[in-house]
Amino acid sequence: MKYIKLISIYFFGSTYIYIGIRHFTEPDYFLSIIPNYMSFHLELVYLSGVFEILLGFMLLFNKYRIIAAKGVILLLLGVFPANIYLAQSTLAQSLLEITKETAIIRLPFQAVFLLFAYWFTKK
Image 1: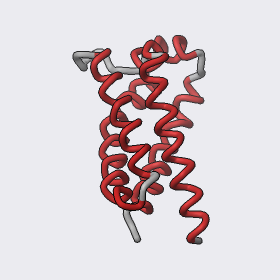
Image 2: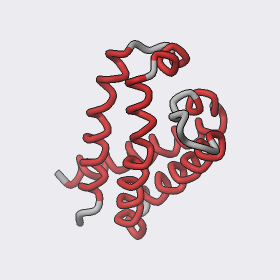
Image 3: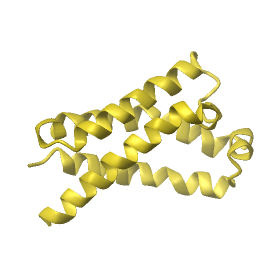
Image 4: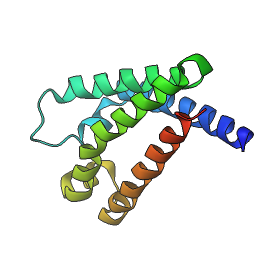
């Protein structure tokens, strides 16, 4: 189990880094799923990208792993409204070229990601 956890940590850490970088290289992708009721859309895209990169790197180091995993939990909770908006908005779905069903199927994966992050907080 120890090796599965370590592989998971490196997988998720590198994935968060990659997705965080995409916030800067493809901001329009992320802009399209920010709910209209929120302000500072581009700033939120960049801010969440910074945190994804930072927390992704921190996950890779045992010394910072627990605080990083707790940060990932907060980040996932913070960006969840964007996932809900994507499931509700036909405009956002069309901009990302996904179906409503795909957007809805994505929602439970956030719970899986939260469970992994929670697991990473445990020694």
